[in-house]
Every structure is written in C-alpha cells, then in structure tokens.
Image (cartoon, rainbow, N blue to C red; front, side, top):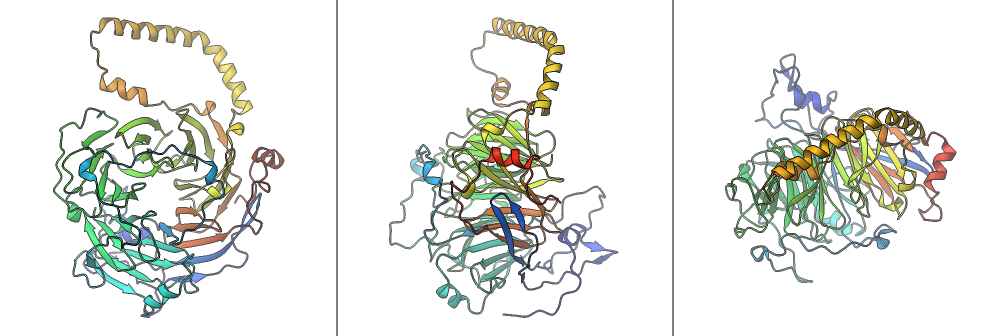
Length: 581
C-alpha cells in the first residue's frame, strides 16, 4: 500500500467543493488514508430493549479534485447546490453467502407478481443455469484507458484477502465524491479498501448491488454519477462497462439507482430532470427520442410514458422511460410485493406507481418543501418518507392516506429505513437520519396511531362552528358537479379529472396523529446521509465519510422479549426513551 504524508487541516466537503476557492486561492484538500477508531463508551443508543454500543467509526479518505477540475466559484450568494454536484456517503451492503432472513419474514406473504417486462418477447433473455458463470462486463477497469476513469488502486494482498475471508462476512461499497471504495467490514484491516476507483470529474452519487446474481465469485454493482454516466462494475474480476455514455440516453445526473426486483439485467435509474429510466446492463446505448409525443394512452400530468416497456424496439437502451416531473427525483423504493414503486420528488410529492402497468396510482404531498427519502415496511403495508419539512411521515397504501407525522428532527431528513429484525405483524421499528446530525428510532403500531385528545377537542369545537358552512359548501359543490355532468355529452374522462382522482389533498395537522421518537441521538458533527440495519449491527454514514457501526444489545431479539409498544409508551410518559440531546 502507498503511504501519503500527514494531511493539512481538514476542510469540510461543502466548503471544498461548493465554494471551490477561499480568498482567491484553491482549497488545499489532500487525499488521506482511511482511518478507523473504536470509541470506548462513546455515543451509545439507549432503547427499551437495551443499549446499542458504538464499536467502529471508519473515516473514509476524501479524494482531492482531479487536476483537470478547475475550482469553480459560484457568483450567486444564494446558491445552495454544490458545484460539481456531490452527495453524502452511501453504502451498498453485500453478504455473498446465503445468510438467514429476518425472523418474521416468513409470516409475511406476498402475491407473486410477474417480472417487469415479462409479457414483451423482445425482452426475453435466457437465464443463467445453475453452475454456469455469470455474464461479466468486458473491460478491465485496472487497465482502462478511458478518460472517465482516473486511476484504480487495489490492495497489495487483494487476492489473498478474498481467498481467506469469511464467506459470511459483510462487504460494503461506498461512494465519497469522485471515489468509489470496496471495503470488507468483516476484516481486521477494514479501513484498507480492497479496491478504490477514482473518476476524472464525475462524482458517484448512488449505487446498488444485485441480490439475485451475487455469489462468492460474482457481484453486480451499478453506479450513477453526476455526469449521467452509469458504471456496471463486477469487483471480483475488476471488469466494468459504461452505460449512458456521455448522456446518450439522458444527460442529467443520476440521483438514485436500483436493480429491478427479480431481474438479472434490468435496473432503474432516477435522473435529475424528473425522468425514471430502465436500462439493460448488456445493451448498447442509442440516442433517445421519445416514441410518442405525449406518451401512451395512460399518460397524464402525473406521468408521461416516453417509451413503454412493451415497445417492440428493445435492441438498445433505454428499455423504458417515464417522465414524472420537471423537477428532480430524489429517491425511490420498490415494494416487497414487487409491484409498486414509491417515488419522492423535489416538487414535494410522493408518487406511488404500479410499475408493472406503468401508471401512477396515488400522489401525496408534503406540508412544504421537497421529499428526499422513502422506504417500505417489510410487509408492504406502509410507506415512510422524509424531507425538507423536517418530518418523517407514515402513509398507508391500502387506506391511501397519511397515518402519522413523526416529529423529532431539527433539519432535513435524509434517509429512512425499517429495522426488519424488530418488526412483526403488529409492531414496527423504523429509523431516520438527517442534516441535524441525529439518528432517531421510532416504534409504532396501528392501534396507537389515534388522534390526540387535545386535538380532538379543538377539532370538535371548530367543527361545531363550521358545520353549517360545510353543509352549504358541500351542497353547492354537489349541485355544481351534477350540473356539469348533466350539461356534458363527453363520455371520456378529462386528464385533469383523472389526476384529481389520484391526487390526495394535504391533511390538516390537527387531523393527523403525532408520533414522538423512542430515541434521539446526535452521532457526529456532519450531516448523516444513510442508514442501514443488519442482523447484528446498525450502520450510518455521513457527508464527510464517517461510517459508524453499532452492535445490537446482547440479548436476542425475540417476540417474547419484545415489550408491547403501547405499554412502553405509557410507562415512559412522553414516549421518548433514551438520551435526547
């Protein structure tokens, strides 16, 4: 391994990459090596079931700007977006062996949905039979002559580390600005990456590992960049392919990327221009022009189908293109039943798609500001979103409405996730992190999400005053709508009315249950950008590259030892257990 000299004082990523210069001089960021610390007694998470202990703080090295990347000073003093665009560190966690699922997953049954594009013969590919090698990209990334890849650093004992490692160990793939690192979190020298890729100007913003194709000898990774280019990377063979090269299909940044459920080849990428694009990792790119001017028959203002998955033209990428908005798509999540897609946008909406039918089924709105993150409960009944209104919001898919607002963050919520090891048919545990540098945990069940009594009294008093007004308004509205129907000879539904049926109004705060956190903890000095739950650990990662690991309480998590959430809340009074700083 190469050794760099001691670094100068470290500057935060936003200053270095957003400002670009200080007092007319370039900010002197020098790349360092990763550093791991093992805090003793620092930052424990006190929860009802026990104490989660912080065992590791792995600090990733921030790469300096590429020499060809001149510092950019934005003359706009109100500009909030970093230039070039950067993102906090996010992890893709991979266990290549057949590890066991969360204990309660067996009790959650899903209707088996067909695979995406199954009905289109043009998309049929021969599956890889058992025992045959998986298809790999063609280009060697270590010997690459591409101007997109700056350099690749592999560990000097790379082959030995792979041969000697525990097959049940945990791999982590992490982005930090223009670098992408492959880490072995089960190794004693976890701070030394197995491989590190440095890109020339593009910053890696998102990535995902294919759970279907993973094995001890093969892992499929896709990465989305600020330049719009997508990298299909197979780390064990050090091979890669470049998709959407130079923005051939879409020239805007890739904000989020995921493999399509149950697919070996297809993945979905969200772009900053409001488009969702389905790509095939093995197809060549072609300059994309929409196949229809206003999309297919199911198009509306909610979504335009610029290319359908059912199109017969499937020789090149893209496989499908859906336009949701003119504003940025921040994140999306597939439902456990592999039928629905929850998408959150900068325009402040959460859109639910039946992506197999390529249609929007519901549109929900935030109180204000954009929505940033979204996830599904393990049973697929609930969606949870977080955003610029500093709230974590729980939505019911079946009831098509908001269930509760979770109040506890002091700034934007950047990531939400359920803990499947602490969820069952009645009780749910979820976590959230945000720009306020805090990690919050929440417990809920449907029975406890009732309207607060104080709000009920206020609403009852208010309703008694406005009853007559509401009745008159309702009568006026009904008479107008009846007159409109009687005067109209049209049989087809206007597009605006079609969207009004799926767009749900924002529910008043007085009508919404408020849920306090059971634990709130400031876990660092820079914004937290990602949260993940594993059987034995909780992980967070931050804007400046801190990957923190907490071990779960020693006692095993069982249904018998899990206290009823409602009784826990009544015992604590305020509903907040543990340290709230």
